[in-house]
Image (spheres, rainbow, N blue to C red):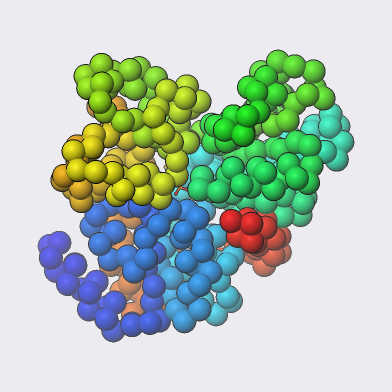
Length: 348
Ligand code: 13P
Ligand code: SF4
């Protein structure tokens, strides 16, 4: 029964005290989120992980790339645990290191040494390591604009991976015309959508996407506005460019939360992001009207794999000294990935 599982989680948390920290991403289910010692978006959780010096165990309620990042940023005597190893990210799986090396070879042939590789943190540790050893860095949706500016202060062009949409939206917000962006397709190994002379291209976007945010479409924005002209549309920048342009505002998970928290009673929102977060915002702000941008429920299926039974199972194992599901990034990969992550953290 749920109440017995919840009680057991509380008992183990109390018994382990400072040895244990539970981190929870905002897209987690309430049944898990309620037990997080710290909550946040990808950037905040990466920063928090790096600060947990006293904890021997960090249970990461999020997805695999986030737990890898936590492992890279914590010390060797700390163990990061992902309660379900199947909690991956379909976007992170859209770029593997061999594909990225192939792309880099093509780009080096076309553009010489003028490209900075930048990966969204929603990527494997191997991709972060690739960026670290090639003068590049990571970014999150909270700091992508600053990181683009950092990259452009070093080189003329950016290879942005694996999310085509965050890359395009960020570049456009810096005033880069769409014609100066091209798309790299890892399946055909070619540049697509080339609308200008090669030497005019400023941003090369990896053809990857988020399986949750791709469901928000322009017609959803139009439909909610027809139903209620006063409603404000707020979306995550993993949504496609048309949707972001049509929305009233866009930003990372933490940004979305802040906008709602700072809005006056009676505000009305249609929000284009993961459903657990939208439903939690609606519950915690009954003085506002908050709905999902489309009528389809779009959960992140892999995030949702972390449920109360998995959390309890992971905690029981720590309590008994078994350590199920530790996430350990190989030392050499971690060293190079840390370079890319630290470039981001120092400039955030
Ligand atoms: P942020 O947490 O950076 O907003 O990213 C959202 C997301 O898709 C996490 O996987
Ligand atoms: Fe990956 Fe999208 Fe899920 Fe985030 S919401 S973990 S980007 S699939």
